[in-house]
Length: 449
Image 1: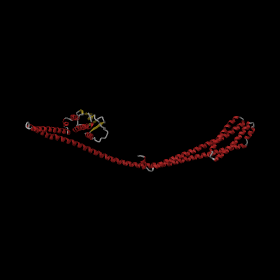
Image 2: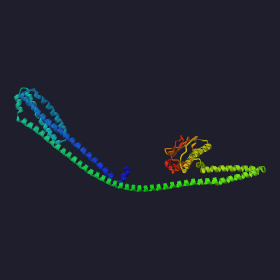
Image 3: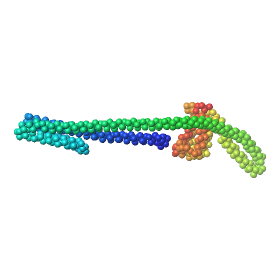
Image 4: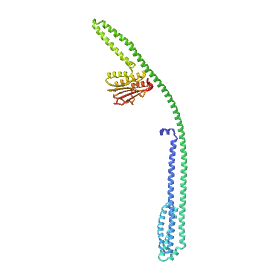
């Protein structure tokens, strides 16, 4: 069943399948890209949180390094200070890119940047004063309450930005959850649609299958009936053909017997009368004697023609001499008429009279076909018994033919095959163009006499 047939028989299935597939792709792709966008924003939020936390750590590191230097005067405390300054610049650059299009956090960031710059300038001033030997002044500047308020304000603004990003992340998470929920609902709905389409398809397929099974049962019943009828008709035709063949052979035998007995007696009597008349007219009428001599010659020709016709109708040698000598005579006469060399390998076999006549007719038909169509120079005729079966073979070296092809005029071969099968035997014909023809007949033990 092709796709067009399925579509015609199931008009709802194909549109539903297309709609379900398109909706599935739409939901899947929409959910995917929306989730990708939300997750990308959440990654940026995470990076912003990281930058804010880094900024706070860097500011604390600056203050810690400054105080360590002010208290101890050891220069190694300024190394984290320098690294923190670089980190602060990088964090502010990242945050400025992140909040470039968000006005409210951008203002908070600008305020944070201003306070941080102020705090860093004070830190740098205290470090300079300490380096110039004014440690008390530097410490007094550091411990002033104003600077402590600035530091608290810086940390508060950082916490404010962190809270903003935390809310943004929570909102993004809600968006992802909502997208996944909608995707699940859509997939579930489409699954219901697909199951419905499948149910409709299966129901229609079951109905169609039931119709096909019913039609097949009807066709099978009709086929069985026709096969029985064909078998009966074939058996009747076979029986009729066998009856006609038998009647034909019986009619030939009767005609041969009548020709031999009645016509033979009449011709012999006529020949004797002509001989007596010839003896009485000896020396009296030369012209009449010449006519009588011609009449006797004509009678001899008629007697010979009668004998030839009689032998063709029912070979008397088959009854008096047996099958092998009769086939030998047939092969010799065929060779003399056609000029084709015939080599015989004939053994006495035990067959019924009907089977012997069948073998004789098969050989007769085979050599007739050879003389008409084969253009052969040699013929090999074999007859013998092997493993309880009589084997007959007629082989020639003629032009041959394609035995697998259907031939328009093959009545001779069909006749031979029917004769053999009527005696429960088997006939095979093997031929190839340019390589001659072999006709084999085998009579099963059931047909042995």
